[in-house]
Length: 291
Image 1 (cartoon, rainbow, N blue to C red):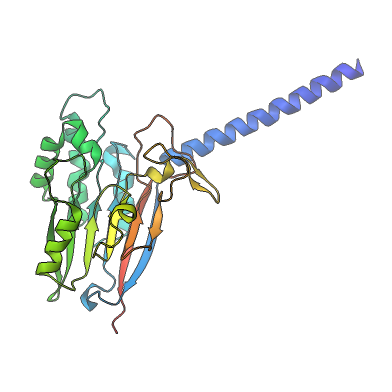
Image 2 (image 1 turned 90 degrees about the vertical axis):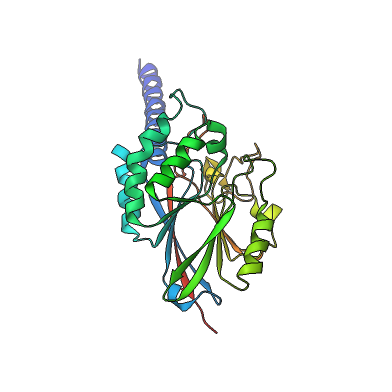
């Protein structure tokens, strides 16, 4: 009798432990899916014009049609708190795998993008999902309607008090086979605005592997989704090329001629849910270190 009681007690203890672990894992998965975080960087440059000291860029990437509150109201509030000078949209705002009718994602994103454009000037660079979705034509038309600049392998000058920086954007490699390459675009910038401070918007995270010597100051990108699952001390687990523990998964890197700031993104496009990898808004403050 006493032995049976001890066996039942031990069984219940194990069940309690399993239940607690299951609840903890569920809470962590939910937190990783729904709790937005803001990651802030402050970067100093000797060639940044003094007028741009304190200039703030908010980067958004890989939304994949995720929703944080009605029309992404929670996301908009977080962006507003950063008081950005500009907002960059670094691709994959729509999802290529969807049961929605063509154009429906674009239509449903309109209220969010409308409010986003009211916070600060916005600049878009395409991702692989925009090209693969069949919605890029509708999506780019909406961006133009809202005054969000789509950088088609081109650049613009941003001016402050008579000084300027260059902001460029490249199309995702899923674009036309004969389009301009990133190094060709940068060569044009160097030819026309030599020694200017430059920021390049892209989507994919392979810049330091493909173009380590590119003559720019910052590259902003996403695509890696933070490795989807992140482990303490090890970082992201899954790469976009089906590799494990990719070298470039999230954060800031300074291994080439430039800083590469890699967003963990806001949504997901794979069946595996994010884990220990909260959706991320990236906020970058530029500082001038004049000689």
